[in-house]
Amino acid sequence: MAETLSTSAPKIAGVHHTAFRCRDAEETRKFYEDVLGMKLAAALAFDEDPAGRDRPYMHLFFEMADKTYLAFFDVPHTVNEDLFKTKDGMEDWHYAMEVGSKAELDQFKARLDEAGVANFGTIDHHFCHSLYFFDCNGLALEFTYRDANHDVILAEEAASAHEAMRAWTEKTAAIKEERLGRKV
Image 1 (cartoon, rainbow, N blue to C red):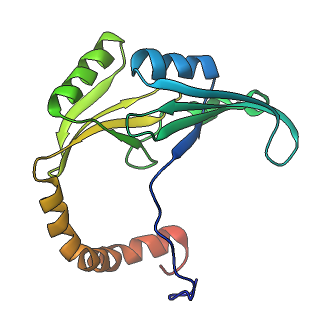
Image 2 (image 1 turned 60 degrees about the vertical axis):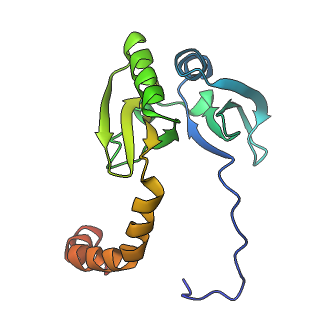
């Protein structure tokens, strides 16, 4: 990929939605609406996929307070239980949702406990504090709230971010070359 592109990049306004597969639309609705209290904003049923193939699916959207959405696809003809095994939130990925305060994080912890949803935290990440858990599809989720010094801490981190990246790349290059079979 070219190091310098001639076309300038417009500003990305933000995230509209992030979408994942789900095992079952109703099971997912119950978790996100009944347990997490999110608004079911849309449940769109289609008979064909975007490429025009005969592949019915449902696309669910759950609204957050900032008007962004967490979305799911229920695709019954290709559903496979292996897709829904619990993910490792560090080695695979996780989805972090922001709450306004420690009190709200504690309230969600109590709600998850009441619903029988295993969770762990609160973990202090220095600039934010997090509670981790899994949804009914094996998706690793996080609720987080910003530390009072969040912006100051991240400004300090930004000042050394490129140097930290350079040092990390140097430190891990041999491991990655061995594991990936190519120079990184």
